Length: 242
Image (tube, rainbow, N blue to C red; front, side, top):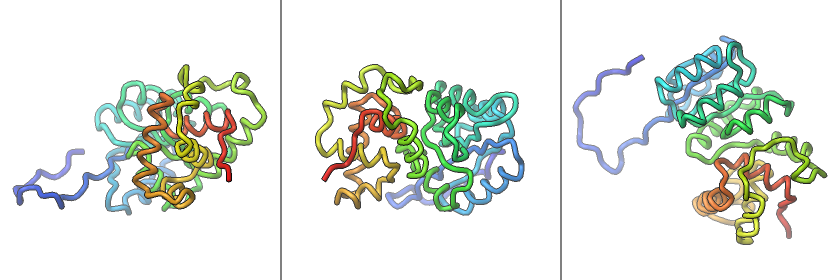
């Protein structure tokens, strides 16, 4: 739905407000969608631009509305959330934040392959949901400590060749050798599901410095999200020492 017609006003200045984060909510349960919309729209920096009850509609609306983030349930009719995520990511329509339960099943692994930028539990607190949307919208990705622990459990003791998830580009593992000591420390924190603010506190760094290190890590490893970075770190036993 088109918004109100802009009216003339003062010339933009450096104090002009930051554009709102545009979110499309996709879930086949109307009550769940309504709850998610209600939570998101309490934040002054987020606006919900559309809702979808199935994967086909989610992809179509993503193309029409071009949101910053699609909040995507994985189990939906017509086209499941994994396939919808893949189409949206491949076409560069938006970042995708996947709604999931505690179980890391084939849907979650499929969403990883499809390029999801983050995962959040359906029972997450409102503040966590808002934070996740912000992180994913800014390209940082989002992985809660709870889901990170489940990933660690899933990959524990498995060599990289034994993990049945071809989510990582060729050469990413070898590129680990190019990371500096500090970058490896940041990567280890990412693998634990820590947000930038928590990493900054853990390593006694400025949050902006953490963001810079994260961008360099993803670039060096040829990865598109910190979710992939977390998986790579867990596969290769990258941990914070000392």
